[in-house]
Length: 124
Image (cartoon, rainbow, N blue to C red; front, top):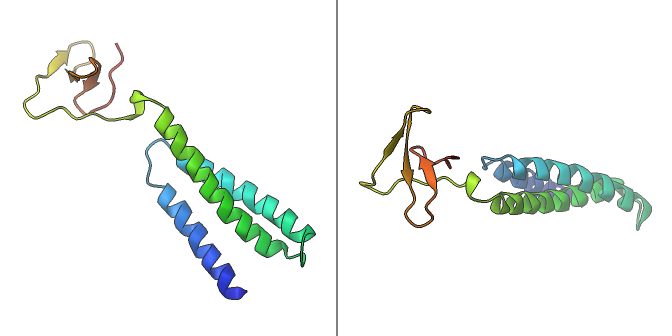
């Protein structure tokens, strides 16, 4: 039983660490929320079912919640749209200067959208 708990702890720690590799914060936030909610639900269920082991239930629930939260956060990132995606100008692509902003931008020929030189979406 002790080995299972250690493995679950390693898996949940790894899931949280890997979720920290995003730029929007959705995955991190949802992983943390999922971990907390899953651990709480797992403790309650584990305490009331079977041998009444709240600790094991909390660990299993925490891991399941972390994975579920990370998945939800990733889906949010994917559905946020073009504003979160960075575009890099093609080699030799023409750059334009926005005098009001004091920055260079380029036009994506496929979509017609404009992006700043660093790849962030430019709103007109």
